Each structure stands twice: as structure tokens, then as C-alpha cells.
Image (cartoon, rainbow, N blue to C red):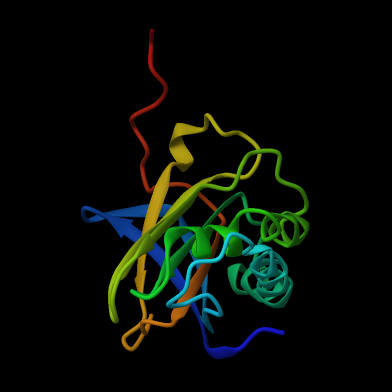
Length: 180
């Protein structure tokens, strides 16, 4: 069972960049779930009980995020922000072993690894959620990041799990792949 304190969803729509309007807006849907960390304040070799927490969060939010996009998702990302009484592995246990499957199901596949990030920080800290193309890990045009934060989380004994779906890459990508 997951001890959820907050669920936050938002829709970020980019219409222009550097004063240049986009031919089509890029939409990013973000879901943040603030949960209790059952391992806060103590070390445990066995943190596998957090694996199904990630799956349950993915099952609960991925469909809602897909609906927020209003069209097909082509990129995704995930992250965890662990409160000060936890460790990075607690966040990793939430986002790595089982969260990916419900995210992939929501976007109709996904051959590429889901970019991710985990860190330990205090209340109100932000985390950069990396975003990449769902099928092509080398699509430089889709390498992106969205920064998220929750004003009153993570408390010392909490974890924030973040999921992102996007219907496009960066506005006006011009970096391309390496010519070498």
C-alpha cells in the first residue's frame, strides 16, 4: 500500500522560444506524487517493497498524463526526489525496476530507456527531470529537461516521484548529432 500525501499534475504548453512562434505548440504533462518513505531514517539491505510502489504510481498517473497531452506522446522521463532522512536508492527503487512498464503502456510502446534522475534534498528543492524520445535514444532533438518542485515536499521522511510525457522535443532544435 502506498501512503500518498499529494498528487500534482500540470500541463506545460510551449508556444514560442526567443520570440519565435512554434509551428505547433509542444506540450509536456507532468505528474508528481508525494509519498511516505518507509525506509526513512534507517538502512535496509532489502528495499524491494518500493518496486511495486513505482508500478502503482505509474498505473495511476500515466493515463492521466497521456490525456493531458491531447495527442500522442513521443518522449518521456522520470525522477525521484528523496527527503533528507532517505537515500538515493530509495528513489531509485521507486522509479527503476517497475515504473517503466505502465509508462510505456500509456504511450503505446517505448523502445528507449526512460531518462531518469534521483537526488536527496530538502523541502521545496527542485529536480530536473530529463526527457528523451520514447523509441530513439539518439534523437538529439528530444533531449530536454523540465524542472519541477513541490512547495512543502519532500519532507525528511518522504519521496517525490515525477513522471513526464511530452508530444515533442525542444523548440527549434539545432544541435543535431555529432558529425564524427
